Image 1: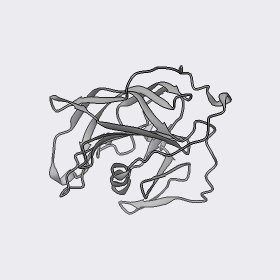
Image 2 (image 1 turned 135 degrees about the vertical axis):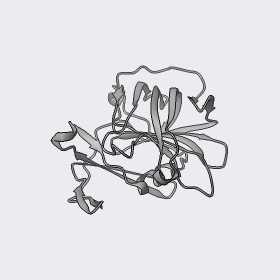
Image 3 (image 1 turned 180 degrees about the vertical axis):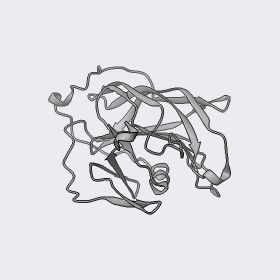
Image 4 (image 1 turned 135 degrees about the horizontal axis):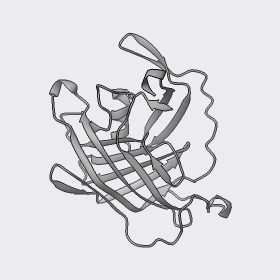
Length: 223
């Protein structure tokens, strides 16, 4: 089973993604085979409970690219957002998604993520994609996770994100076969050990940023 190896730089870039709408070509009806249904109707909605309050995004958007779905529930104009990156483009339940909460602070680049520093290869929580409407280009589902602050030295407690829902979120990009990524090697040195992430590479770009997500087969001890 493949596990995430998350670098702090990756988490900063994920929170910095901004989405812009663009004109797209009509989708071939042959691609409308995601397991969901079309014509769901209703306004876009993205919300999740944490810290005793309900977070409601006022500008939720999504992007499908390179075999992954990225959903950003943005609130306000200060950069606050809850972000989901799912390494799939079909209806289903996924336990290997990357989920983060960016507080929007201009003085602290840290953020909550579903990565326990004590077990960095095992992201927690799950995302369930319940519908991908390829006719109207909207996506819906649910999610939950436990977030850990990215700066371990701050010694902050974990934060539970519960009852998360995203409904009729507009997306850019197209649903289709995952393209081949011509990467011969992608590795990084962590705690003095070089780890090869070339098993599976996902690349996405938006708003002037590029995000590279590398997966590696977990060692037998992690299975």
